[in-house]
Length: 108
Image (cartoon, rainbow, N blue to C red; front, top):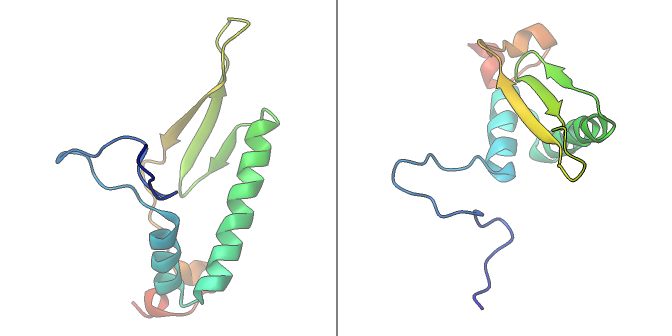
């Protein structure tokens, strides 16, 4: 058996498959865009995603305009698992200055 790192992709990526956005990269991008430190960004993202997960597990849809809507579908079979479907927002332009943020993105 071959040991793989915890963050290894579940399926092999082909040349036409875009690379996965991992937590580390997301934290770095958000920290750079907002001027916040990585620890603060990581804690905020972890909390936000934990709240979304809780809502989904409670059977609630999640809507966040910059992302889109995550809907839950349950097939009409007793053994069926729930299906989570993301419908991305058509426009996800976010202006950090609207949220009172400072940093590189706010200076643009």
